[in-house]
Length: 220
Image (cartoon, rainbow, N blue to C red):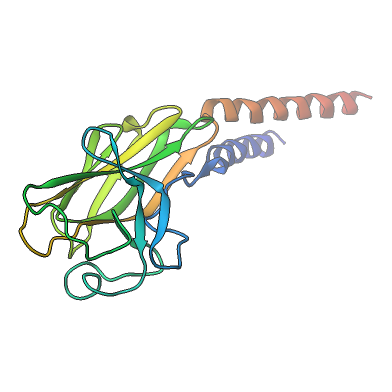
């Protein structure tokens, strides 16, 4: 009987620790859920390097291949994610006289979750290049628009409440065809919604209550 109870307790604690682990809510791929070309993606806020809203504050999803997408220039389109561009015209020319900076920000809320258990990973690409930041800490760098580049974040970079991921895109100056865009895909994420010691304590409390009732019945 004692061995059985011990096995139940161990199994219960392990189950409790894993039962509350789930993907992080609010991590959207660029263009996620958009099936029609030139639709606004309101998940990613668009500003300049000073935090001033530009081009209406959001980008447009470039759905489907078509120059510069899938033509040996930008990475091909897919159902998983789409390129975001500042305007609905994916071939629009920018930054003829000096380089431009475009900050694409995605916020998510960890209220009620344990930030010490959070992590995510993904990949991104940008024209011309980009730095990925989580709460101001660099987590990745993309150096061109024809390849994917990895980014990831571990528990020490997350905070309680609102967290912000920023993709700071630099579009180099060029006096000619010079579009810009961003592509992001999250490949994995995880967070525990209940601190593990608290969850284990709740389980143990319920087990002790069950055993107390069982012993009382046996005495009767």
